[in-house]
Image (cartoon, rainbow, N blue to C red; front, side, top):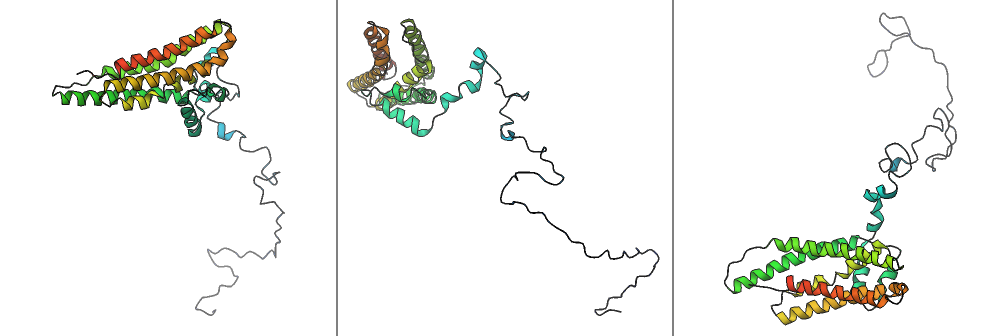
Length: 279
């Protein structure tokens, strides 16, 4: 018997018991030195060979082609219809967009194309046009609603205001730069197409505060607001393209004047259809 109430079992053969194993003696375990501060280790040791490693591009496994090739999926015109082709034109942050919006409000500087020549974007133009559509529809609806209520007349919502605004703004920043791109290429003064999209898109930003000010129920005030916004937008585009178009020869002045007048024509159209309230 042992102290504590436990029964000792001698090393004897007992039916159903496991025979005792002789003590092999003290076995020394030696650990090899390793640099634990470095991960992964520079060289693999032991049973794990150095050839079994995670793939080097594990983080890019979903961005590469399905076939395992590092080559792009499309080339030539086919790449135009991929998302990757337009990704660089949306690679801007808030600071870049705000700086370009401020630049559009100071049209006499004429440094917008110089600042955006290496990184023109489509992010700003897209959201400027989208915001203009929303502001034009909401402000126009609000103003006409108040005007009808003051005249005590029945008011009905005009859904065509949204579709018309979308057609004007999206169409203008798409068709006009495309036409100008062809004209400049014809006169041997080619300009980047995305650069033109970027320039014309930011030129419309001034119409956002102008539309907000159109809630003032004074017709002469609305004409002044539309005129000032149109002049600023036209000057912004014309001065930023002036230096480049001068290389087109003696006709550069006619091209710049046409660009300026076209921007003023847009302001007149917006005044007649968006800045005017009829009851």
